[in-house]
Amino acid sequence: MGRKHGFDYDLIVIGSGTAGATSAAIAAKAGKSVAIVESGAFGGAAHHRNDVPTAALLYSAGLYDQSIQSGNIGLRTNSISYNYPALRAWQKTAIRRSGAANRSYYEGLGIDIISGLAHFLTPNEISVGYRHFSAKYFVVATGSNWRLPNVHGLSANGYQTPDTVIDGIRKSKHYLIIGGGETGVETAQILTSFGAKVTIAEAKSRLLPGYDPEAGQAIEKALSDKDVKVLADSRVLAIEGQDGSKRVLLARGGSKKHLMVDSIVVAAGCLPETDLGLDNAGVNYTKNGVKVNDYMQTNIRHIFAVGDVTGQHGLTHLGITEGRMAAHNIFNTNKIKVDHKSAPRIVLGYPNVAAAGLNESECRAKGLKIKKVVVGLSGAVRSSTANFSDGFVKLIADGNGRLVGATIVAPNAAEMIHELSLAITHQMSVTDLASSPRAFLSWSEAIGIAAQELTN
Amino acid sequence: MSHKTYVKKSGKRESEPFDRKKLHDSIVSTCLSTRSPMGVAQATASSVCEAVIIWLEPRTEVTTLDLRKKAAEQLAKQHPEAAYLYEQHKITI
Image (tube, rainbow over all chains, first blue to last red; front, side):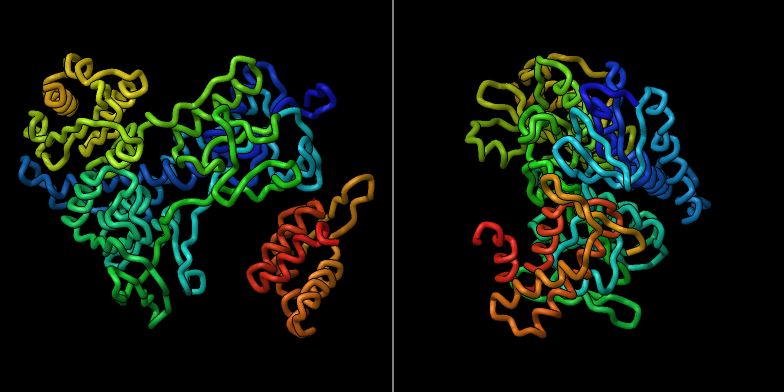
């Protein structure tokens, strides 16, 4: 443990998730004395609870769905099946392979890993168990927890969250998912692929309310084709137990409705984890997150916050970027800002949904004069060879012809979106985008077609 | 609680173990200040203390500010008027 300037460490990072671990690794590589404090499993929620386990199951679900529907492309798939213990084992393998338990990597960089719950006692001192640690700088990266909606009887009657849902899955069980955002949609895809009956209750007027309407409509159609029932404009009011099932009272379009389900899944967003004595450090925060400036710095100059705890986006990849920026800004005089607006957002599943930049309603709210185009995937020859044509590419350009927003629904949309994210970051025009050749028989041909249409 | 949680005092005062009775008494007197009947005040204080003790369970050291904030948060769920008074106590006297 290095002692410098009277502190135990140069930097203490609270939380070992992707955002915090990135800050810690960068600082340690720059020769600073660093500690990470973690109260749970090393690696954080993205590796253990959210992104990685969900993506692993979505991969299985996608392959299974495509296989059973592949009779018309010359395959015989009568014998394909699944079993839940094997799916759970695959999920655990994926988590292990993702490097979540790679604690030794950080220890190899000279970082001290401290297990326990961190609690600020003063602006430069935390307690972890019965020990006290001080640091010149802190990065708060405690992430978030599932937000429980205000539903009467929810806690008393039991509920699941997307990360625990696979543990209790069984065929024909009827699940009600509260929330039709990214996580709700992904969870629905997993459950329905593996034999469960699913209903989604979304308070807003459509699925994926943070995306352009076309994306929500396309996903609603894809889910409806798999017998998922979507109840838009629906608010869950109360839940009561009845003969081993759950009787749910919903308010929908001015009327009330009852629904019998076996299990409730809460996927109504996350709340930042701010219960770490921030008042003792004088840090400004609300229940929606720790307040930071463009440099990820809180109102207390030596305390930074990154990732979900800031409540700004909930995207793991932006958390990593913020972690990198925070470490840079702590130890360098040339401060850098995080560009949140062009970061890609994705919903995995079959098909993927991906978006970058502004959506149409955000453009309107900013008063931007826009030009848009929506091109179906059938324009790309790949749709014929891959037997899929239900998606689209949507591009939005501003009055100067610069790309400001994009949405894609396609089997590989999560990979395709990065080209458009880069174009938005570097303020490229749709003419630039259209002039770049794309490989014949790639899904990206649809982007070229959309850009070409927008330039006309 | 299976372990002892210490309460760190401001200034140079010594830390001391968490004392349920002190917290209970302070909540009771706040509730009484808002003209709650004694029985209600005691029931409210017991419920707040239980919630605070659950919160303290994984923590070994907290500050008086933490305790005050957490108790006020719990009190607000049952007795908003008393919670306001409890939070503003140091400002109003």
